Amino acid sequence: MLIASDNAESTERCAFRPTDAMWREAVSMLCEQCRYFPGCEVIEGMIEMKDGGPWPAGGWVTDPGAGITCLSYQPRDVRTLQIDELDEALENAVEMCGGCAARKGTDASQALHTQRDFRQAVRDRGLFTCHHAGNEGKPCGGWCNAIKRQRVDV
Ligand code: SF4
Image (cartoon, rainbow, N blue to C red; front, side):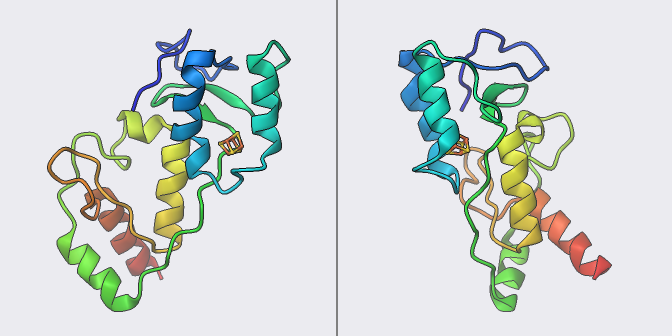
């Protein structure tokens, strides 16, 4: 989901000041997936910024892949798959799609919070699913490749 920003074309990450209209969508996109939500000091700072205060360190910035992201975003824990579950997921993984988080140059490969989600899912062997239309919820092909490489390296 893209959230337009004042600087959506930029590849730089700049401080992002949410408007009232964008607030709900931004919280839903970022904070509701984050391990620090609720009760996060950064989001308190973002509320103050929305109302005219300064940008809080580690706060929301423009993002070349997703419109906006949060520098302090951390994914929630993922459930580590049992060996048989992991084997099944690898068997059922779809081909890497055109927008895959593991494909260089895609929006998902440049979105900071998506990259953190992806890396954690590989590191902890939790399921990472495809978002491509028709394959939603199926094991991601890029994740599958990364897990297989990790297995070879162990
Ligand atoms: S760290 Fe960022 S993404 Fe996470 S809850 Fe706080 S403001 Fe939201």
